[in-house]
Amino acid sequence: MVAHMKILIIEDDIEAAAYLVKAFREAGIVSDHASDGDSGLFMASENSYDALVVDRMLPRRDGLAVISELRRKNIHTPALILSALGQVDDRVTGLRAGGDDYLPKPYAFNELLARIEVLGRRKGAPEQDTVYRVGDLELDRLSHTVRRQGREIPLQPREFRLLEYLMKNAGQVVTRTMLLENVWDYHFDPQTNVIDVHVSRLRSKIEKDFDQPLLRTVRGAGYMMKDERSE
Image (cartoon, rainbow, N blue to C red; front, side, top):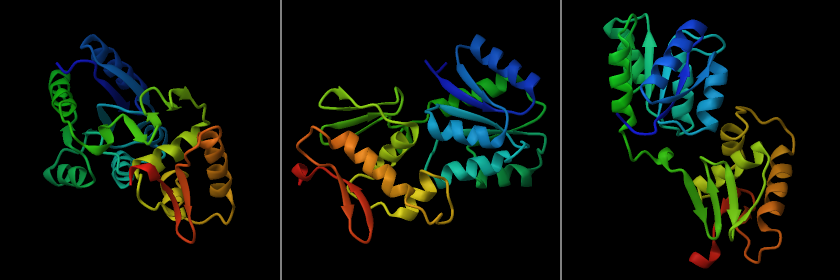
């Protein structure tokens, strides 16, 4: 058993989901539940899980699309696909979409549990890091807190997601297109100043009353999180 596992179950069948939540709880695994693809994608993007159990056929966004989008966002939480489609071609399609394992229905819960335990032992993927640091600024993905010099800085959810993406890519120029796609989930330019407004608010919160600026505007390119003192 992998200690202190937390997983996300993305399943639209409410009875099946309730059974899995109960069975995993009895096995010592905490689980959250999302009932459609869009909410599952949001929860998997915004929270840290040890593994995902993803039903293939989901409303609003199918399971393979959820996993593909997570991988595109560079989120590598191990994912097990559950599906009534169990042919070899179906399994290959699921794995190529970014799934780590594929279990056809019907299945025995003990087998599902064993497979999830194996996925939970996987370590070392970049997204498993729970704390990002740039200079004296620290962001904790699990507690959803930001601190600088030990002082907690309250952020709105979008500000937190913006800072998380900037800190994850610290030292690199982050373009407006990258922010639109990875923070706002836009795949087009809305022709608004939404990024400028949020960056300005974020900069005010993380740099006010502190001597060292960390969030730089790279003219004509984008933004960069960097501690100049580390050079």
